[in-house]
Every structure is written in C-alpha cells, then in structure tokens.
Image (cartoon, rainbow, N blue to C red; front, side):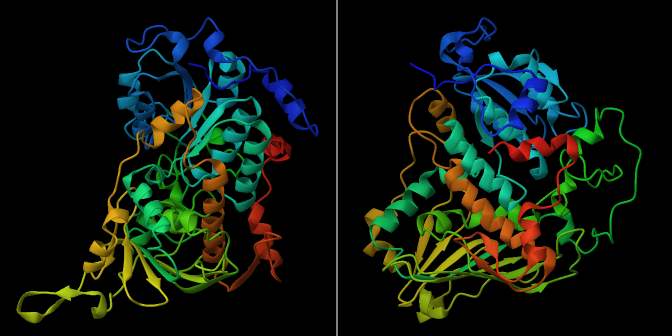
Length: 478
C-alpha cells in the first residue's frame, strides 16, 4: 500500500519568506517514512497509517477525529486548539487520545512536527479555515476542512487554485456527499428523473441563537473577562479583526456574526442545496435578491431570511433554475394537492415536506422531487412515480463514508467525493448569499468574471476585510 506523498516541514520563518514569493517548491517526504510515526495502533502497522494533525479538537471535531481514526487507518499525532478545557465536549477527544501532543498555534505544530504529519483536519470557526488549509497544502499536506470551506468567496477561489497547484488530497466536510442519498441522486440524474428542473425551494427551520427573537442582541456583544483556559484570543480571531472577548463568540456562537461565521445559509446550506448544486451543475448564480430579512443589520445574521437566486441554463435538459432559500420564520413550503396520493375515503393525502429540505419542480409539473438534507434519500410525489423509476430510487450505500474515503485517498486508494473543486464552488454560492444578507440589496453577478455588476461594495465583500498583517502572506500564496 502506498501513501500519496506529503512534504517535509519547513520553519515558520522560512515558510513566510517563501509564501511571499511568486512560486516555491518543497521536498516530498511522506511521514510514514519518518521515525516519529505512532507505533501503538493495534490494527495496522505504523507504515500503513495516516498521521493526522488535528486543528480544532472540541465541538464538531469530537465527531470528525474519531471518525477519521475509527478503522485504524489514521491516527492523530498532534492536536491544536486555543482552549483544551472550555471547547465543547473537548474532553471526549482528549480521553480517547490522551498521549497526543498539544499546541495552541497550528503554525507551531507544522513547524515542529511537519515531518511527522501526512494530513491535517481543520475543524475551527469559519473565518480561520483558509489560513490553516493553505499553510498545510503549501507544505504538501492533505487537508480535510469542515463546511463551509471558507469564510469568503475569494478564499474558496484560492483554495481551489491551491488544490490544483499542490496536488494534495482534499475533502470538504459536507458528509452527505458520500452516502446512499448521494448515490441515489446520481442514479436519478442518469435515469432522467431530474431533467427539466426549473425551480428549487430550499428551507431550514430555526435552530441557532440569532434566529430566536428572545436571544438576539443589538450590536456587538459586551466585553467579558477571558476564561483562564483560553490560550490566546488573538489566535482565535486569526486574520479577522480582534473584537473584545465575549462568550457570544467563543466557544460556539460565532456562527451568528458576519465577521466570523456564515449564518444558517453558510452552516446548513451545504447540507441542503449540495446535491442539486453539484449534480444539476448549477454553478454560480446571475441574480441574488433578498426578499425579506427580518431584523436586518450588519453585525449578526437575520432573524429569518428569504432569498431568491437565479441560475442560468446549463444544457438541453438543464434549463435555467430559480432557487428560493428560506431560513427561520414561517418557511415550510406548501405542496400542491396535485402531488398528493389518494387517502382514505377518497381524500388526497398531501405530503409533509418536513422542517428542512428542498423541493425540486419540473417545468412539466408531472411530479415533485423531495430531498431533505445530509445523506438522506430523495422521494417523488405523487408516490406512484417512485414505482416508475424504482431502480433509480434504490439507495445503495457507497463502500466508504465521507471521512473514510478521505483517509483512503490519502493512502492512494481512490478519490474523495467533495474535493475543493466541488465543495469550493458550493461554498462560493453560500458566500454570495451571505453577502446579500449583509447588504440587503438586489445583486447581479457575472459567473465568468466572478464579479458583481455595478456594485463596488459587494465586490469588496468577495474578499472581505483585509487580513491583519500577521496573516496577510497567506493570501499571496496562489
């Protein structure tokens, strides 16, 4: 079994110097050839495992790290977090892997242990995904990054370029993209079930603090004393502005603030519109129009959102598509009775679309495709249509799940299903939506030039605020 190559480390000072240059090379030396590879895994010998540097250990990482390692083909050798005490559920990870070396700064980890690391997992707040990923990729490390891939449109563009340039394995953590539901959706496409989709309704029930009127705050949170377990608030803020510390940001509620997160669209959009975006080749929209943003402001995301997107025609069976995103509020769509099935006593049973998902409408109006979220399978209404396409509707689970496929790809076995070339463009759609939520104006976008038409303020938001000087070199690598 052969690993895909991963480069040796360079010093942080050397990295910064090289990153500022137009192009630089690196020496390839897989970590499995070094003496520091862990030797205590009972399932596989040290020469056949992927060594992980895990950036972000609490919260979502408490699921990601064990899942990457559960079959014994990967093992963590380094943990990075700014708080190994207060991060949500961090104790679970530390108890499972008590002997892993700990760092507060991912740059120090890569400086000191770069030779011993094959791949890096990035499970941190959205605004720090890019800097960790681009540093690791430039050193030849494979990278797994939680969704959304980046905090800004141009960060996603740079990571897609970096994927091509450095040739490493990548995977964005929209885990439903490797599932029975994803396999089914692809089968449905091949069978013609998804031809002539012209309208997509997507919605998400409220589930985060800023979508609860009783929990919303006005303006920025008040400053609070930093907890003693927090190693560095400056590191947590990364390339973004350093606001006074507040528990409203750290360890979790950062997602509700434009400065650090992507709101509900950035969070759940990757799980809800993922299949239609990828398999129907939606690409980038030409129009983004906020219809209603409750309690709109430019600090926190809206109480509820209603946004309309227009995507151009992509081929004979892929006509132009209108996508309507609703989050919070009274957002559950009403299904037309014509898509119902006969019930008892001759009544029509109208399907319940549920609290989260998508409805895909064909221009013929002969049936409706319902898709929920993550890896869940799709249905057709009326249900009788399921029998017309019964072979295509059978959901077959893939051989490997999303995280295992990343590890196997690092070992040279197959490819990932949501590399940055896939997850990056989806993230860019999410970023365009959050720009619309920030500005609350109608926007026209040129997918070829990747620029807004006639709106300089919106174009500035594609890159976001200039990074703080300590982090600026990361934005010059590719």
